[in-house]
View 1 (cartoon, rainbow, N blue to C red):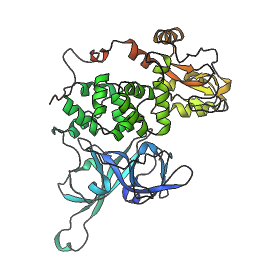
View 2: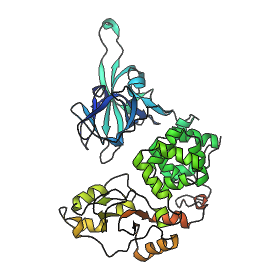
View 3: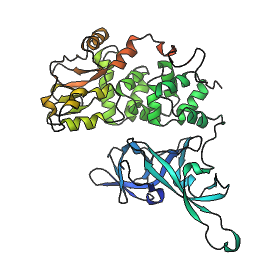
View 4: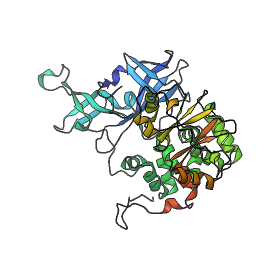
Length: 430
């Protein structure tokens, strides 16, 4: 759904068919999963509960929904068929929010929720429920008639949102909702182990993956160890491959193998490749998911890939041009195209004609000092890692280099430049 597209009422999604990109039906929508927020802010739509032909119900994240149109849902085709399990902070729209009694803020009248409207936020991938279709109670001599119906903003009613003063993990999570992953990681680090586990369990997979990447190693292992194995595997899949591999490397061989066996085969294969390299080498530092394009791709194709909101700024700074196959390890690596160059050339220009093929690449066994020297010499934020046969294995980003150059306790250092000494986010040590 593009910016400016109309809202969709959830009643129109009940039982709607879900298709993969090839037009094959994979299931039907049975519910929507949302997370409520404080201060009557619209809830975030996390995904859909989809029932497969086998009657198994699975979770389909909205990040894997490419379109909702003409009574159908189109997906990326990548589905996790593990059975859906509702988490503590999640609410089911059909099962828990419809037919609920809530109160109009302006008049104090009690109304019944008949439907909810969902929309995708402009220029973002996030979805939210922001309108409510309600019915007032019948009154006077017309009790046999149905009450008046109206559509109001989410903020116009009470009876849904979390309360600010609660002490449970849900309220704590809602309070820190707007924090960046690194700041939320700092909060979690200072919580008690019990509360840290509660908050981690309540976070969705993508959010928890982002936070884990920013936590010290001991906290990562502690949190991962308190998750069910199936969920731990999902969270590792959602992490950047290099960070996930670093975390896996700290686990015992049995746990490591169990988690790898629960991952999607392609993700597990990438992890195994990374685990084969020494920790403080280019191969051990790299991610296996840089932007890779064929030589016949255009500047427009490259810019479309760079716009992906899930990419870090360092990975989005350049694209790597290789002969097929495009998945790492790729075919022959031809060169790099920097983001600035993409902005200077017409959209129809082939990326193969604007290559920076003079830039040296790193070998997977290059030690950390050599990698750091490369970044300092060429003023780069990412670098290609290429094997002896000329295939691109991945890319090292400057943030991963800094993580390994800084002292192990660097996350303990206070660096909030906009705060006076002694100020900061209060945390619950209960």
